[in-house]
Length: 329
Image 1: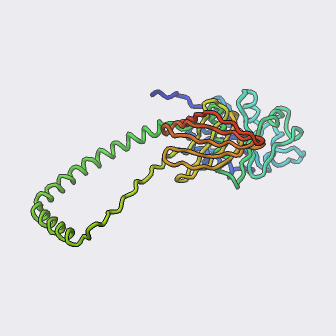
Image 2: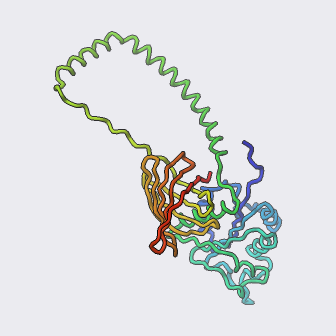
Image 3: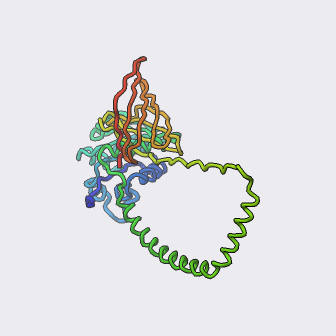
């Protein structure tokens, strides 16, 4: 399988004295979904002595989404003239954002640590469009949920998540190790056969003695306990898309227990619920914000598809429709 030479990339803009810690944590969270070379974090990538304006311009050339991380002190300190840092022509953050806006790069304000979108009056004219962008808030109390939602939104915007390329490369390395282990196991197996063959007579005598003792001591008419088969718990955690494209789901799994969050096609969270998986049967119920409830009963056709019925309850009325969910690879 051929992979594109250029992956779509994410540029992260932030003010060091405002959100350095939160931005580093955000990058670590995003690396669970995207390759490291898909994420450009300006301070981390810059080398001493380089012209930062050229590096930023070149990096934005290959980026498709800019995340503007905004905390409580994002505007920056005021100088003697009363101008905040964002109002100055040589401000890095201003340069990053104005360049992205001019190039029609998707800009998402990411609000952290209690930060909020600034007022248009607090921004230079070339940054005025920023206040019209839909922001995404990340709270420390629900960090994983909020960063997972952001990763889903980025994927919906065309940023590819980690595919099976890395898994295949790891698999090749694993095969080399397995070959070595296999050879060693083969030698060990031959030695065991030789030892067993040398002691066959003694072992047979011992087995006969054990069988005789067992037949004498075992009570009659005693039923052996039946071993109950262990039920397979299929892993279904991940992102599932409804083929009708009405919504998509993020499912997290703890054994048979499921937690489910629904999203609109635009990436907005719409509801939450819980469920269970038993064998290949999946059930869950969602409470949809300002709407009602959705109950799903589906059969896992394979690890990437489930078919079933969706019951929608609103204002006391319920309707049912056939539904197919496909796992987003």
